[in-house]
Length: 145
Image (cartoon, rainbow, N blue to C red; front, side):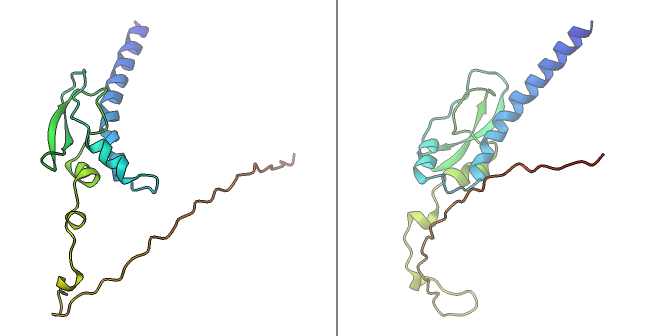
């Protein structure tokens, strides 16, 4: 009787992992790392929606490039592709075109909220970030007896 309970527990754990793993896949789009390039985001967002062969029926969001919006679809819980997000906000942050990047604004047309003076923008220079790695050396401790 004991192996049967263990088998049921293993099946339950597998079901939970299958449900959690796709939900966590969309969260990595929120992390803005220097290694993530614009091309990587665009290629992921241009993929078609992929419900996958499984039958869990999870509500997910995918980016529709034709409508420039994140839309819902039913995800089966396995396989699929990277154009699958757990939250609409995550999908929009990763894929939706920013209105500031699609339309060039003239800084002289921007007005301050507190006065009628135009806001002047200073050009920003992207600084090169260097990553340094430090090697960890094992430390030895002596124990007195």
